[in-house]
Structure formats: structure tokens, C-alpha cells
Image: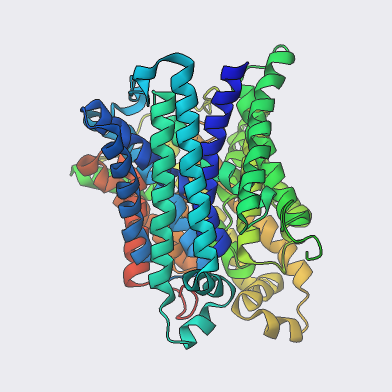
Length: 294
Length: 287
């Protein structure tokens, strides 16, 4: 039972790191990033493949963050001068292309068979102690992430990106170049997703392209929309609800007989779709958002 | 002459992309957001056609079912969701369209299962022109697509409701003060966009295999064609669809089958960099 809670805690914190990245990008800056899972995938594969080549995990994690951030750079350069909705399409396309590349380049990623046997963190400690150490590490990274986002939100830079979200023309009129700041935000958010990906790969120890479908992006969107866009507390509460939902749907399958795994996957996708629509329509400010506004 | 064959295959594929892009560009031009549910509307159309085809044995009945059922689903999505969000930001509409896409896919997955399904169409001998082979099926599909396109363009350019739709696309406020009722225009728009996506889905289903995910995979090429053609330009969407279909097909021997979608993505980036308004688009818009 304890082990179960530790496992859930690790996965939940990985989702919190993902939603922190999206909070920075969408919540604070207004960037409609529909390709979050692409950066997550780059982080996961980078760290996993490097670690299997014998690179120490500290460096493989750093490389995961760096490569994910680096991948965001050209995407930002191309599309950030365009309208919001174009950016959404481009990022969605980017994450699909990432998945196609890791599916097709078998020499590097082993294609659909995936990468097995990824080394765990703290493997030498063994068993439950190692698990606990992983949990503490992810928690520490998450807290650092929360601290950074809080700091950014309160800084002049934070006021500037929020101004970009609220009125981009006004920011331009003040002589600032919004695209430059948006690219910075995009890169930092992508690097966070890359770190989340690295933790995921080394925790699950086996990654395949099918784990990096757009649905994951929208799990994160669902979390921040349910929690409340633009608030760190919203990202955390939203992720907690997301985990309840994901784990709950697993339990439901154990209880209700005769439901196959693919059916359950359909039900899960349908519930995500329905929740996204309902929250956007009836509670766009999320659960932690301002209750007086609509 | 290998490439002539690819050209022919690309044109048929391009008609499917063009129809999907037409659905996207109509909605983008008039309702002002990129409808990410278009791919799953296509899937819906394919399953509707599949069911009708199984029941009656006639492809024509399948097409009719795809047109009607997908038009209705699209209209329902508008009435239940998109209309309520009309005054909200584009991201609300965009996220809602993703939600609807997931929901449709889930319903189809539960109703029809996840195994691959195919249209049982009789095999027939291809016509041979020199070294180019064209199957009667491809020819029929092309004719169906051309008929659908002719009908859509007739509605857009020859009927009062079509003129009103184009007026709203041009300038919503000006259309309103000239006495055009936006409600009627939107209902016509969503019926039309859904039906077009439904036909595209049926064609794709006949050419390939039908799964609950297969429409979603067409979303990126369709968006690319809509952007390449110029958002809001129906002619542009079809022309760009044909170009994209041919380019994807011709590039396949060079980059491999799996990179088809990546080719579409690269083209999208290139268009956005070089000419964001696309081939036939107006100057404002993209930036």
C-alpha cells in the first residue's frame, strides 16, 4: 500500500512539473502550447538513451532539459510572430512529428518496440528506499520549479509576460518585442517538460512511442483548466484531480467486470473530452480561480 | 514514368485532403477558429458510411449516410458547444474542439470497437494508360469528390445562403448591419462543414482502413492545406489539398511512408515563414 502511494506520488509530481511548464507558457504568457508531450518525449528519450550509453544520470537529465529547450527554439522562431491559433496548430504538429521520428528512426530509438531496461535512479539503494529517494528528488525538483515560477510571476519579467498575454499590442507600443520574451518562456517551459520526461523514463524504465500521444498534452491542459489557469495552486490541485481520475478509472475497471483495456481507454478519452468542454463552458476560471469572475 | 503513377495517386489523396481542408477553412473563415474536431468528424463520416454500406451494399447510400450523419453531428457540436462560446477567446473554442474530438473518438471506439475495418468493395481491373494504372475505384472516388466540390461551390457562390456565408466571412459586422441573420448562416456553415468532412472521411476509409483514430491523423495535412491555400479561401483549400497530396506521394520514395505527415508539417512551417497568408489568402489574418 505504501509502495502504491509512493508510485502515485512520483507520477503525480511528474505531471505537476509538466503543468508548471504549461502554467508558465499558457497561464502567464498566453501561449497555446498544444505540443507539450513532444518536449516530454524528447526529454524521456534523450535521458534514457544517454543513460544506456553509460552517461551519468546527472548529465543525462541536464541533456534532457537542454535538448527539449533547444527543440522549442526554432518552433518559437517560426511561429511566435503569428496569431495564437496558428501557434496551437504548429505545436500540435510538432509533437506529432516528434512521435513519428521516434517511431521511424529505429537505429536510434528501437521504433515501436521501445527502449527497455532504462536504469533507475538510486538503484544501488534497492527496493523501497530507492523509491522513497526518487519521490523526494522529484518533490525537490517540483518545489524548485514552483519557486522559480512564483519568482518569475512576481518579477518585472513576469509582469511583462502577463502584459503580453493581456494586450500584446500595448506591449509592442511600449517598445518591447513580445516574440523575444515568448521564445524565452517557451524554451523554459519545454525544458521543464524535458526534465519531467527524464524522470518519467527512469521511473517507468521502459518507453515506447505510444506513451507520447497528444492525449498526454491534454491531460496536462485538463489539469490546469480544472485547477485554474495561471495559478501555481491551480496546477497542483488540477493535477491531483487528474491523478484521482486516472487511477480511479483503473480501479473502476477492476471492479466492473467485462470491460476490456481498449474500452477503458475509450472511456478515459471520452471523459477527458467531456471534462474539457464542460470546464471551458461553465467554469473557465477553474476550481482555484476567482469565483467572482466568470 | 514511376512518378506519373505517383502523381495520379497523389491527386486522389489530394482530393481527400482538399475536402478536409475545405471544411476547416470554411469554419476558420466564418466561425474564426481552427476546428480540431474536423479529423474526428471524418472518422464519424467513415463509420456512418461503413454502417450504411454494410446494411444496403451500396456505396451511394454510404455516401448519403456520411453526409447526413456528419452534418448533423457537426451541427449538434455547434448548437451544444461552439455557439455558447462564440463570444469567448479563440483558445476556449480551440480547447472545446479538442474536447469534442476526443468525445467523438471515444463514442466511436466503444460503439464500433478498435479493430480495423474495411469497405468491402469489389476488386476490378485497372485502366492502363501507357505505364500509368488507374483503378475504376479511384476514378469513382475522384468523381464523387468532384461532385461534392461542385455542390459546395454551387452553394457558396450561387445561393443566397452561400452569399451570406461569404459576407460573414468577409466582415461580420458589415454583414450584420446589412440584415444578414448570423444564426442561419452558422447553422448552414456547420451542416456544410460537417457534410464535407463526412464525405472526406468516407473516401479516406475506402482508400485505407478505418479505425477510431484514423481521421485524427489527417488533421495535420488538412490544416497544412488550409493554411497553404489561405485561410478562408475555399478554392485555395482544394488547390492546396491537391498540391499537398501530390507532394506527399512524390516524396514517399525519398523520405519513406512514415514521414508523410512530417512532410506536411515542414510545408506548413515553410508557408508560415514565407507567406503566412497562403496562396489565395488576404493580407491581414495570419500575423
